[in-house]
Length: 213
Image 1 (cartoon, one colour):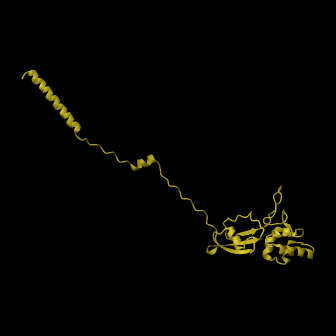
Image 2 (image 1 turned 180 degrees about the horizontal axis):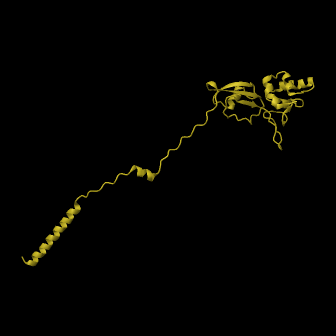
Image 3 (image 1 turned 90 degrees about the vertical axis):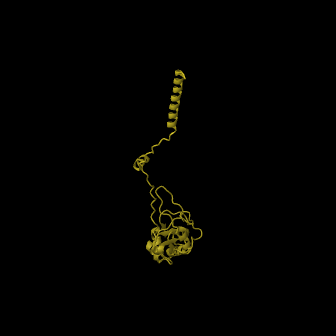
């Protein structure tokens, strides 16, 4: 063979050997470095503190008497006024039912019958309103059918209808009050109300702050 041919053949063989070496190297598997584990402290710093929402604190338990019952005083224009024992959690409507309900014609608009009762509470049904504020006019008594009153009811000047608006006073007792003032020339003091037939110590205590001579 000629020297030129041998040189060309040698160049081809070298190129083939280089190509084969490069191809073999690129086909070999390469090791991949595993990622570093995430540091928990670093994760906590980046994500921020995790706080739990506080649980709502329960409200104050309702006041109850011994044995899970409450005792309330229902007075005024009801069928059975007096002391009544009710289960804990009872409402004003339950107390009214225990007292036999309001008397016919009594307006219960001003009474919140859905309110939860407390032990030792007093409920007055149909009581006349207190003295009105300055510049205002007195309205009709709650549950009453008499004339409007402003301040204490006068035992010497009140009509039967006005006396009937007082708590625990019905038409019969109102007539007894009128008969007493007619027979004795009027009331000289509120204490004389004790002498009226049908008024005991308990009823007098309810009426004393609401009436005058």
